Image: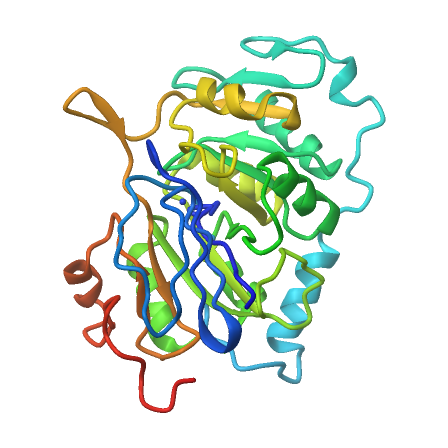
Amino acid sequence: MSQHASDPDDLADDGTSATDVPVSGRSGSTAVELDGHGEGTASAGTPSTEVPSTEVPGAEVPGTGASEDGGEEGESLLLEEQRDPDDHDDDSDDDHDDEQGGATSPAHRRFDVTDGQDPDEAIDAARRAVADGACVVLPTDTVYGIGADAFSAEAVQRLLDAKDRGRDMPPPVLVGDASLLRALATDVPDQAHELVEAHWPGPLTIVCRIQPSLRMDLGDTDGTIALRVPDHALAREVLRRTGPLAVSSANLSGQPAALTCDEAVAQLGDRVAVYLDGGPAGVEVDGARVSPPSTIVDFTRRDEGQILRRGALDLDALRQTLPGLADLDEPPAPGSP
């Protein structure tokens, strides 16, 4: 049975002591990595009721296939065509001395992008690294995430290798704007658009069917994609410059998700080319820093959606938008596999 990792945050989204969790779904699985939160597997009919202690990690517009002007498939192809294949710098970052907060090691660079620091150099370094197929670490609204070019199978494999994980736990995809949902997913019900309109950017990951025209190999996804738009201005700006990123929590598989850049460096070291230090993630609770995971909602089995993992957005809040949203332990919709 294939799995599709989600989120980060999912990208792929966050926590102090959890590990990544696959959640299997429809006809094999609805892949969702639970962004560094709690290890285990749950079938689509019986989603996991265990809420991981923390997470990471991407996008909006209804679609039902190609139209005369190209429709969703045309948008997907355009999205890939807009990615500059020559966006690789011959004078790569290896030759650059660090400035205003960048600290060089033999194989990775680190930038201070906390409040008051100019992020342009750091964002550009991240963009170059992604264009060269390398991994980057960036802060999100949940935990720190490790990201790679979602359209490069080699880069995604490099991300999985950095975390010591297999293709059976593929990462979610983070995007900088909800308008990319139509280009990346298909058969998205109106209810999903209503939910993301209300809660993106934010700690909501949705699972949909991936656009079949996309040349995207995230792992064993069984034709699904987990998407989120993070509620973090720096992360969204990075995503606007790089395009969609496969993002997972910035930790070794089975280890606590990183809530600081130091924690990410300690676990991933030179497996990552660029680190963006945005300060600690999460909040202090009783002397410990914690960050709730994103809530994951699956739209591949029922139009009203079903929660695959409880998180920062509770059921009552989500049902204000979608009264028919199914909770974790509700039975599958009639006729579901």
